[in-house]
Image (cartoon, rainbow, N blue to C red):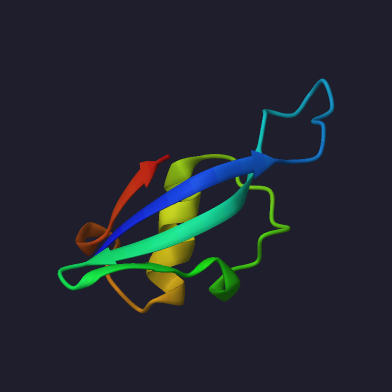
Length: 73
């Protein structure tokens, strides 16, 4: 399953923290087309990396991480 996301702004990080992002929009792509699935995740969560988002998607959609792909729009 392939996903693409549009990042949004996260809260401003403190000096000791790394930059984070929130997901503004999220799409799931399958053979029969694309579907926006932004409503299925917590869009107020501050992700540290796309890899962390990928792990959350694997958990949310009950799929192995290796079966998922993620692109930034």
